[in-house]
Length: 260
Length: 249
Image (cartoon, rainbow over all chains, first blue to last red):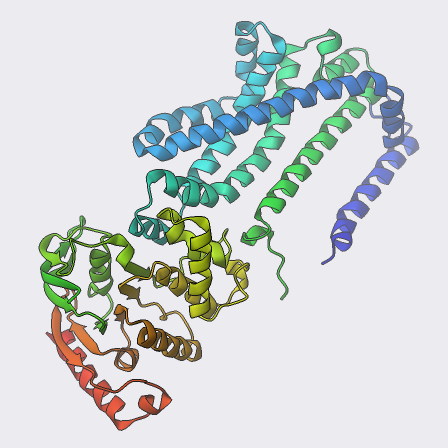
C-alpha cells in the first residue's frame, strides 16, 4: 500500500472529528471558557505564539536532554547488566522500582532536594524515560544467536570481540524499540515535572503555560499549549521511527518491505 | 590420522548421558559420515571435536600436532547461522577478522571462498536477500575461508529441499575432490551418507557409541550415474541394515 493511501484514513477521520467538534461548539453556542472550537484554538496558537513558543523550547530542551541522558545511561547500565548475571539480578529490581513509582509522587521530593529547577525537571524526565531503554537493551544483549556465540568461540574470539561484533549488533533492534517508547515518555516526564514544579518567569515550560491559562480562564490558550505538546510527541515518535528505519532497513525484518 | 577419540564419555549437567565409551578415528583426507537416530549424540561428537565443550571421560588425541589448532577446523551448523546485519562478504570474512588477518589479505581470501561456493556477484547482498541454499553456501564459504584441514558439518543440508540438497551434495564433493580437506559429516539420511562418504560410522541410540562402520568403496567422481547404480543401492541396503541393528541394540 502506498504511503498516501495509508495516510488517508487517519487524516479523513481527524478532519471529520474537527468539523464535528466545531459544529457542536457553534450549534450549542458553548462558551469558549468551557470548550473552544478548533478554529479558535488555532487562532490563539497564532496570536499567543510569542508566549508559547519560548515555553515549547524550554520543554523540548528538557525532553531532549532527558532522552539523551537516558540513552547514554540506559545503554551503559545494560552493558553492565550484560557483563554478569549477578549484577543484573542484583540491580534490575531497583530499576523496576524506579519505573513503577509514579513520577508525580517523587517529583516534589526531587524538586526539594535539587535546588536547580531545570536539573530537577531533567532528573524527573530521566527517571521516566530510562527504563524502556535499559530493559530492551538488556534483553537484546542477551538475545544473541546461540550458534553464532559458538561460532565466535570456535574462532577464539575475545570477550570484547563477541561484544562489539555480536552482542551489540544483536541488541540494536531492541534498543531502537526502547528508544521509541522512551522518546514519548521523556516528554511526558518533563511535562509532569513542570506541573509539579510550577515554575514561573522566563524559564517556564508549556505545562506552566497550561496551569497559568487555567487560573486565568484562558481556555483556548490551554488547548493551544496542549496541541503543541501533542504535536511535539508525534514529531519525536516520527523522528525516532525514521532513525530506526534508517539503521535497520538493510537487514531487519521490521524494516523490510515485502512484496507478496 | 587427524584425530582419535578414545573411550569418550559426555554427560551433560542435567544428567543426560549423551555419549558412552565412544571410539572413533578420523583419517587424513577421508569423508567420514556419522549416521544415527536423532538424539544419539552425533552433534555432541562434532562439538567436542571442535572444542565447544569438554569431554566427561576418555580423550581426544591429535596425532599430528600439539592439540587442536583452532584455525585448522571449520564448522558448518545445521542452520546457516549468519549475522543478519552483515553482508555476505562480511560474514565470510568474520573468522579472519577475529584472528586479526589484515584487511587486504582477508578480503582476497573471502572473495576466493565466495567464488569456491559459486556466489560471485553476491558479495554485497544481505542474508535476508538469499534463498536457503545460498545462505548455506555462505556458511560453507565462511568455514572454508580459514583453509581448514578438518571440516565439521552438522546436518548442514537437512532443512533444504531435495533438489537444492542434491546440488549442494555434488558441489561439496567437487570441492572436497579438489581441496582434500578431511570432512566429518553428521546426517540422519542413509542415502546422503552413502552418496557422499568414503566411510560411515553408524551410531547407537543414546547413549551414543560407534556401533559399526561401512567403508564405501566407490570410485570418484560420484554423480547421478552413481546415485542410480546397483552398487549405490547395495550400499544403502547394507547401511540401513546396520542402522536398524544399532537402533535395536
